[in-house]
Image (tube, rainbow, N blue to C red; front, side, top):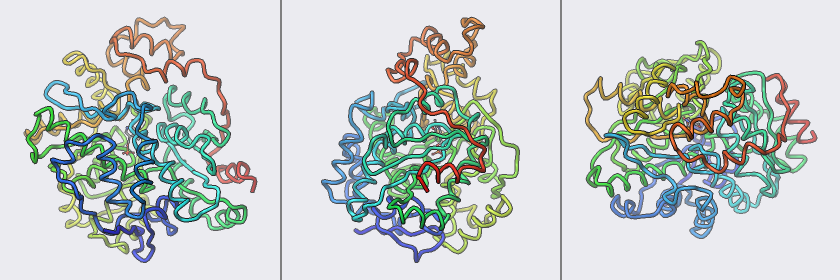
Length: 500
Ligand SMILES: *Cc1c(COP(=O)(O)O)cnc(C)c1O
């Protein structure tokens, strides 16, 4: 079955999978979506017996129908190898009465590694298939984890450059150090004096800047995106939901065919949208629980049917979710409108102009498989402490937001469906937050409190949890990127870096 992609804002704008991956964003500013959901050729039982790589192939082969089998297999082999510190790639762990899907065993210790370790390979293959000789310039806004994971994937990949913008004071010290020490002649990291939404809005504007695009084309360059707006990032994420389901069956946590709930700590709405895609493909998911931190714009959206970004922006202990404009929600809106690009475009333009839009009651009904909640800083911190005390399980703050919201959901609804908590980062990316939550920060001398690695050591001493090698190595790496600019100078920066 051939799957074509179209823009969420115009069905006439169509592309093959490889063209959509290469472009990143549709030329009208919309996001590419499959024009129909494929049918999987494997049964749930067959998928349950497969390795991670095999499941990944089954999903990607269904969606990326213009890729040859050998091409996809090569991409998968290069992506999901010993870079992942767990042979299951995405292991499911039993924690108390719940199951935690650990997505943080990749190179940068965040779930984004699952998609970003394969995206560069998909993009190179796509460029070859499209006979595209242009240099691909990856332009990316990051709330902390995408930037590093994307650079790790694209560093020294021939025919590509990657430029990452991050909010200078909106990422954790470890996230920052991971980015600023990035090697590779083709990698550029720039801090901005603004928040993630500023970075993302400006990146989108640069993408849609026709003058800049023609200037680049004249020099044999073109933009693409490593953000979850790229369909090449979204689809690989669908795989781990199927793979996790298989593990739950194997652990006899559920019977084959039984429904599960998933709780996803959400920012840009990419990860939870992948779970929604899995459900559309036939994975028995009952409820999709959307967990936010204090930037609870999505909670209000699901509870009231109103998306309103006109509200205070909070810098929280789960920085990768400090987002008020969730770009992947556009794809979900498209489905809620029954795939109506005119309606979708109207709402997105309202968001652009007024920062707000309201959905109809029939759209609200369609979203009823979702439940949304948020966790305050205090609830997040308490949850980390509670999980450790009860189960000796150390949870990062993003995952703790999900855990807290999941508990609230279960209390409110009395729903007993077996639940998967999606864990998106290693606690060692946020050692200070975690240790403070465990009420154990007094073991650190005041003079050492500025030193992230003192916190890492202390967290290790407290919990015995092994420190990942990549974190140990980080301590001695030199800082290679220093640039910080006001957020209205991003275009000038890009022009300078590209020699335009
Ligand atoms: C990016 C990120 C999220 C949010 O994921 P989305 O796909 O943007 O919703 C949550 N947790 C961590 C650790 C992340 O890096």
